[in-house]
Every structure is written in C-alpha cells, then in structure tokens.
Image (tube, rainbow, N blue to C red):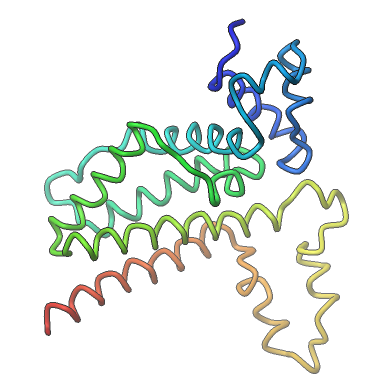
Amino acid sequence: MKINSEVIARTALRLLDDVGLDGLTMRLIAQDLGVRAPTLYWHIKNKQELLDAMATLVYVEAAERLEPPRDGASWEDWLADWARHLRQAMLSHRDGARVLAGTYVNHETVHRAVELNLRTLRDAGFTLSEAARGFPVVLHYTIGHTIEEQAHTSAAYGDDNPYAPERLAAMIDAERFPLTAQASGDLLGMDGDVGFEYGLRLVVLGLRAAREERERG
C-alpha cells in the first residue's frame, strides 16, 4: 500500500473507534500500516496535522452530498439539515467531534459547503457579513454539543460512567436541589437527539430574529 496523508488519516479514523483520541498515536498508526513511525512524518509532520487530515475526512463525509435548497424549501430547514448531517458524521466515529474542534480544514468540498451556506443565507435576506458570522454559530453549536454528547457516553468510563441516569440520581441531593435533580437529564443533554434539536432550533430562531431586527432598523 502506498503511504500518503489520506491513507494515514483513514487508518487513524479506523483506529480511533478502538482506542479513542487520547490513545491514538503515530506509533500505533505506523504499526497498523506495517511501517515505522518515522515513515509517517514524511507525510504528516505532527499530531495536529494528523487531526487536521482526519477532520477533513469527517467534514467531507458530511458535506459531499450537500446541495442547494430545493424549490420551496426554507433556509431554516436547509441549515438545520446541514447541521444534522455534520453531527451524524461526527457521531459515526468515537471522539469524532473532538477531532473536528479547533482543526484546520482545507478542501474543495469544504469550500463548496461554506459557499452554499453563505449563498443560502444571503438569498434568505441576510447580508454577507451576517451570513459569514451566522454560519459559524451553527457549526460551533453542532460541534460543541456533539463533544458533550460523546463525552457523556465515552467508552473511557467503562462500566463506571458518572453520567448514567442512576448515578446522576444518586449524586444530587434532591431535598436541597430539587429542580436540579428533576432536570438533570435535560441539563446534561442526556436525551440525545431531543436536546440537540432543541438547541438547534434556538440557534436558527436567533439568526432569524437578528435578521428581522436589522430589517426593522
């Protein structure tokens, strides 16, 4: 097999599902590829470059089938669907959201996705500046929520996950903090899709409200 940055990144993503981000090393990747670790550094200079290459693959997976809104489709539904696709792409890999957070992603498919987002928002009445500031809000919410979501179900905890419902119930003094105890699942986003959709709706409604406020002058 010819070794290049994409092969290394794809191998890293496969190993990620077994060892998690903290257990992923260049040595482990090299061992899986049947080469010595120094060989990888001809293609990937350090772990940050590795994360960038991995993040690019995840982002491309989410964006490669992205198309402009269909006739009659609202910008709100289109933008929310994009966020859902990105979340699912991250959830398909252990620690997938941590891989994307803070990485540098430079790929034509990613540029196309950004262009479609900006054009869709501008066609919906946002200024280019509003679109350029608003789109990252959706992106960062999606990544941040998914980081928390994956942390709460992390395999690193094994059978002793402090976020397990029965553990949460035992940790909170319901007499002193009755509302916290009652709402613990909602507070920590333990309802998965429901929590994500609620937050996504707030973000999209906020974008719309900001545009309408500017239009009212």
